[in-house]
Image (cartoon, rainbow, N blue to C red; front, side, top):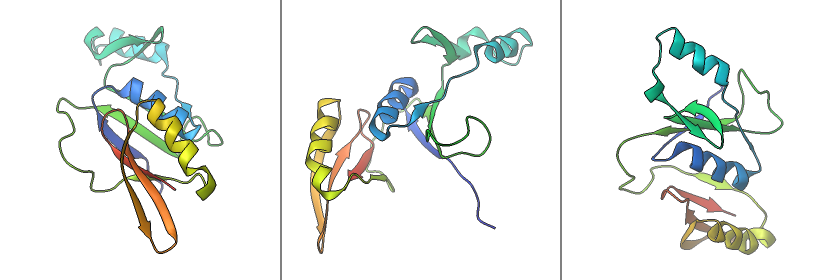
Amino acid sequence: MPYDFQIAVDCERPHELAEWWAETLDWVVEQQDEEFIRKMITEGYATESDTTTYAGRLVWTDGAAIRHPDGPATGHRRRIIFQQVPEPKSVKNRWHIDVWVGEENVQPAMDRLVARGATFLREGQQGPHRWVTLADPEGNEFCVS
C-alpha cells in the first residue's frame, strides 16, 4: 500500500517562507484556526509565547504550511510544512524540490523568482534536459526546469 506524506522544511521564518513558496507554486497557505489556538492556551496546552500575530492573525510561532489548491483543506493532502528551527542553514541540501514550468518558461520563471528573493546558483544539463538551480530566500536549493 503506498503511503501519503508531507514535506517538512526547517527554516528561520516559517510564515514568510510559506507565503513565498505558496506564490512560487501557486499553492494555498493553510489558515490556522485562531479559536483552536486560543483554546489550547486556555486549557494549558500552550502559552502566549507559542503564538505570534502574522498578517493580522494569531498563529503558531513555529510553523506554517501550504497545500495544493485542488486538495482537501484537512486530512491527507499534498502539503509542505515550514517549521522554525534555531540554527540557520549551513550546508547544501541533500534533496530538493524540482519545479517544472516547461523548457520555454524556465528563464521567465527564474527572473520572477530572483526578483522575489531567490538566488541563482547554477545551470545544469543532462543530455537534452536543462535546468537552473536556485535558492529560496532562506537558502534552500531547488531546481526549475
